[in-house]
Length: 332
Image (cartoon, rainbow, N blue to C red; front, top):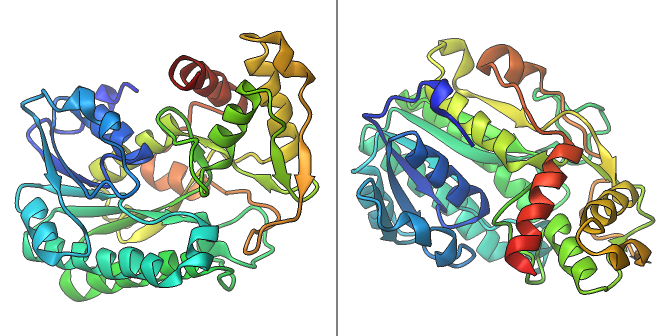
């Protein structure tokens, strides 16, 4: 991802929490490529050392192994930074349903620690990963930032509380904040393993093993799948925007199109069969819908386009083409 055209000042040091995770490690890499210094804070509960291994030799990259639930770790990391990209969280709706206490501890208490540390260490702007799960049971389509419903999972509650806390810190303490509501991000470095793996890398792994992907429901549930380079662009734009109207608010981060799970499997088979034609003969199997899942998700990205100049380059087809090449070369 080339971000040099986005004019991120090279003098700045950016703290990326959860910097060894899927999105965080991609952000670390992009920021380093721009010439900036990066501080990565991660406790490796879900992040992987291999995601940042190639960054460790850089003199502009420093790793702090710590936990956002520990205020001292947060202060240590923020003391070295100008800006924060807060990606650290426990994702997954099913995980939060199985263990709501830990999800709340990390996503709410950890988030509050990071806000306090950012305030106390003079952070210029706090950009954080919000979530499309905040829209809850709202039936409005497409999703617009100022209309949300009631949360459908403990995870969704935690991410909504993040937005409320960020708003209060902006109003009460003058900390500039921007929340980015991610819509089903996918791409290189996304973990295909574990009970809470995201659907795209999980399906890819199953297909490469000649296993039938398991679709929860009848396959008509749809999502606004968003390629990682679109997300990187949005984070950098949130950092560099100097228009005061653009800060202390939240934005959808998506492409603005939705794809159902049946279509997704077809696209994955099409891309993977260019490497192995036998994959084209594999068909999905269907299981019960997951608790807490919303049937459809589609983002309006007009606010991000207007206020941040967001211009996503990858739709689902072009993003999957890039992602599948990475998956094939790295996960096979």
